[in-house]
Image 1 (cartoon, helix red, strand yellow):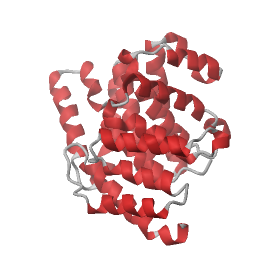
Image 2 (cartoon, rainbow, N blue to C red):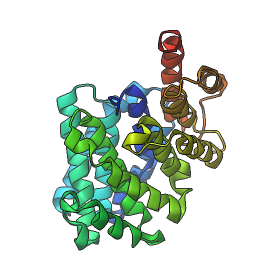
Image 3 (cartoon, rainbow, N blue to C red):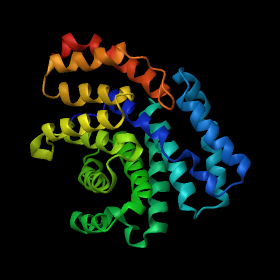
Length: 288
């Protein structure tokens, strides 16, 4: 499996869509409104550096809420989501990214343990045991399990040089596959996006299936009506480059650059997607 690159960091920016208002379940209405408005403001921001500088203060705020209510799973999921997004996207230093995403993973795992005690020691479970747990999950479990999956992916990304950690990818894929069966449109197709990446970056010998990955990418584009430009960038980066399909690669990226990045709830993601599209096109001649 290749090292995880900036393309995957772009993908993880989608985590900012997940769960931030969840802390409203444990705090008053004033903070509820602040959380909702802050999330919207970040996603509608067209300057990624502004968000990069602002997020750490919000992380500390969420940590303080966790200290006051350490066994609240909704709050833990919310905090895990933002730590995963920040550590996976905005932090370049490997050791710091590992620390931040490790915290995200611990928060998400603690939340799952509180909600489902049989899952408290995920890493010691055999794959068959984990698959059995996953197969029992229903639609009411989607939010909690998706929070775990995204935190887990960010942790794996930050530890991509550790084969022991990479060996956990099949468990994440099993989880996402079950979520796709339960509700493939959750978070506007993000489940399909993640499955597209996982099936495209691994060789068939390691469980990958590029053509299946392509179907997932196309489904994610359809679910977002093409307004989430990061899906097309990931499609180009992980599928088209892996299979050396230059025509598809350039077609997807040029479509991203031609699009208006301003879209309610997606502007930040789209601006970052266009930055990545320019980088990929600039290096295409060397790659292909």
